[in-house]
Image (cartoon, rainbow, N blue to C red; front, side, top):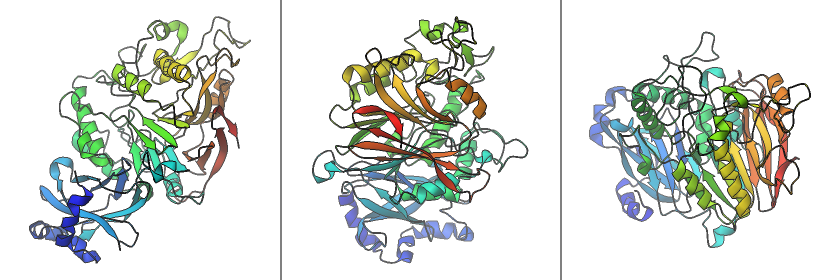
Length: 538
């Protein structure tokens, strides 16, 4: 792994100073071999950074175009200023064909809680400049950091619309740049495009390594997405469409044989295109197994956790005949949802890891995960029957999310309640709607002495993927009083400002997803006060 101290000596060899010097760090043999395609833009997929720690960050790029050698040297440098007058680290890494010519560079030895700028060069070309930052340290001067500005986003289906939301995120409309983006899944979609799509997927549905690689390359060609990657580090997790809709562990939606090989190819392509450490490179066996969950302390302000709800889950209950994946079922028709509480969405090991990792000393605990955690019934439940429905009705639920794993949700919320975890905020995506919710052990019990409020939830809408009809959401909200806000017709992302005293949430919404130049405005704002779970409108 690159270390700042080890890389200082490389500076004498590269002797940067001017832009052409960085490009000349590429091996002359590789340059001559590819001279016939020298005009091909090699950094057409942009740059990115991620996995920030107090002393390190991961830098990413992928060389684009044909006729690349099996191994191409890529020069890189990190500076403490935007003009690259103060270089703090530099070196060269090989981009290998086996990894789709991607670079995953973990630069160590950096200072905590500060901004850096980075760039790459190869084959006579230089990349765009990216900006990144390190996290505050757990101790020392940086530990007392007063603020964290971050965003959550998910579900950016290419053929459903343009990504004006990313332009807004990169432009920091609040006047402060984002410190961090949490991407919560569905970075790509594996489908082919229907006729008349806003902009079509290239090729049909993808299921092979080359297909997934091509789909990521198409998505990453978008200049608005590139701009959002270039302004700050990202922490990324996957959901289902990085592989196949509604898959569960090693089971595909269509129960097809050979799904493990497809998952391995999809996981490999995801790693190749995300700013993830080299150490997370997936193994070939076991469906490409990867450990993507993790946690990060943002000084003494907050502990951030991110989890994986796909790789280790039990298959969904009560699927459609002959199928895997999700269904929407009445509880009375699928009683196993209640009678099999041991079923897990995270896997036993990840459940234990999360339960043991909550901070009791920091004022905030943020949980980044894929979907809506709050119960969402589409019909009345027995304890609060709608007078127009039979009293025996106990709700109708979608089985792919937490409602399909109520025992796992109860275990997670019980830990928050028993340990009195401070400032618990759940962050989600997946459902293509903006939801703000109270999380209680019993969502139908509003008496705080019987069922205390243990966490606040912000589930952000999609960047572009279409949502369900607002009329359907409105009809369901009357059965879910713990959900304070629900809008499915909105596309966009959620921007947050966190201090020791409060969390401010700004729901940023795109006026027209079919217009890349669309305006983006605040649809609603909420505040959560430290020590007081539950969001209030600002």
